[in-house]
Length: 299
Image: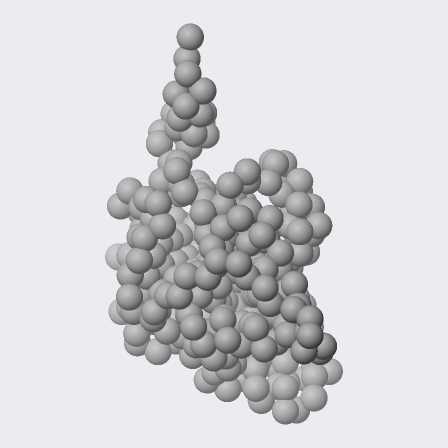
């Protein structure tokens, strides 16, 4: 008779074998990506992480159903890139739901507490009440389960925004959205990635001609705003900075008002197709969406 612990271990290993029986290092499910909610589930055979919690419980469950799976019974930690509500509105609720810690920088935590504070000083807002907080530091690697995590600084109009790279079983996943430009330090962290999720927020002309007030357009286009299709295209075309290694390249955080999935895909595809054969991109290109999940991707 197989013991419950042994049975659970067998199920965990089986869950992380592909169709041909190959062992999987990571499974990535993008639950939502866009201006009104962001959340990505990252799993290994023994560790489950949620990156950003911009969805509430009800919507989170709907996204899992759309992926054809049950919600995870256990999450080992929720990592937060920055305090903006489309990345943090469900943080306290989901941390309580899974009884797990939130990993974020101290300035980000302070801003979340202020953002969701109750107007009544005698009451505590449930959205700001995170029971277990673990502070992380930019540039300082840490580990959760079998996953090595490296938070790195990104340029965005938030308290201390970060991107994340994850390593397990010699496989690297990078998730970086909400940044206005691609400085050298960010480009370095994008190298050697087997899976890259990168913002492609807006088309410049669509934004300029769109309905947003001018001050908001300026904020989006500045170096601490959001990446355009054109900036991403320049990066993807440059073989000196983009190594074309990812097996999956996901364009994320597309604006529903100032971009179009077709425009983002065509812009990126033209850049990738224009690379020389010696530095060609052999992976697959995907577009993450706001209203429906994408994945899972298995590495």
